[in-house]
Length: 180
Image 1: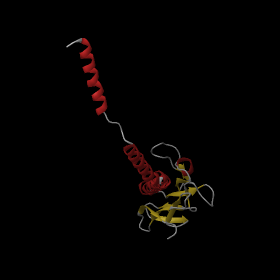
Image 2: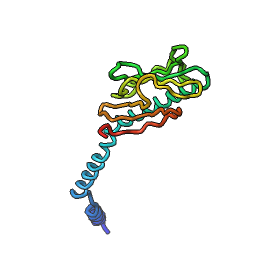
Image 3: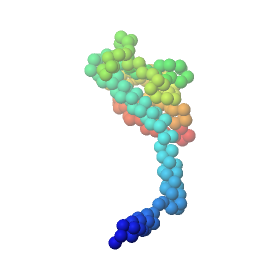
Image 4: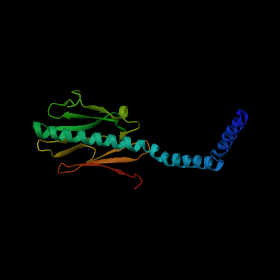
């Protein structure tokens, strides 16, 4: 076989293999774009519910600090409490305090005063009204101000409630629909 015929036969093989390659069709590309759009639409409610997550985190933090005040009362024998701080119409923070001495107690984690500002850590989160709950030496709560249902709300007026019942049980927050 001559050099020229070898060149043309190789060239023909290359062309035939290129013709067998297949790209994406317009239908396939359209289907992928539609599927991506559906996935994006499905994830949007999850992104929008972050405020509810922040409310739940704030309620959980308050609940744990409330339990800490109760534990401090039972271990030290001094009355301890937790009360909201900030504006009277819409408190955004709270503090854990020793009611016997009148001082804010230190956090076991940071060793700084347990004065928490929810608005600096969680966006648009506040208490529905002012609360002050104290625990005696056996952990029994006494509501000084507010009620035994502590309500934490977000900017959508969705709420989480924590209940401190007469037996001293601090019930984990439940999310409620404010329209019901």
